[in-house]
Length: 132
Ligand SMILES: [Zn+2]
Image (cartoon, rainbow, N blue to C red):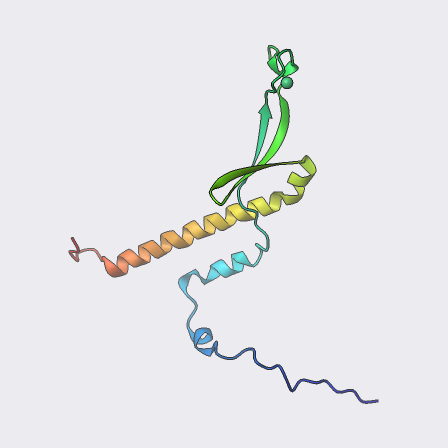
């Protein structure tokens, strides 16, 4: 029995990137290796807070106070507004890695920006060249 694979059409990918592929990897290429593990990253921050409620004679007003919580508040900015969502302990545990990933991404971006600024300054404003 014979079978045929139809591969004659749809070959439009893989062209046009040769020039890019032949360029030497930039000094920061290692960053892509780090990014490979960062498939998910949640924006904002996850904080753990103990709080007082509004009731007058609640245990949270006692001395010493027994505060309510912890409450897990996921805070982020959407269109300029701060939005807070309360997560359960179970949700927080499940998504902790995604918050960690986001922090790692911010660190990586800061690294790349600092290195790029150094490179820019070395190239455009080298020491000894008067630019002022
Ligand atoms: Zn209370």
